[in-house]
Length: 47
Image (cartoon, rainbow, N blue to C red; front, side, top):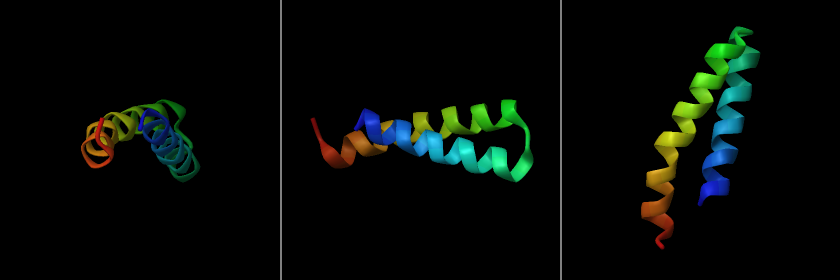
């Protein structure tokens, strides 16, 4: 679950960086995507 959230964060951050060229924005987008996906993955996968 945590690995999946990290993978999602990495993909979203990388795509944001390739799209905008802004490293700070890419890091923030990756953190937001990872933070938002962790509870969703936890709910679907379970404990």
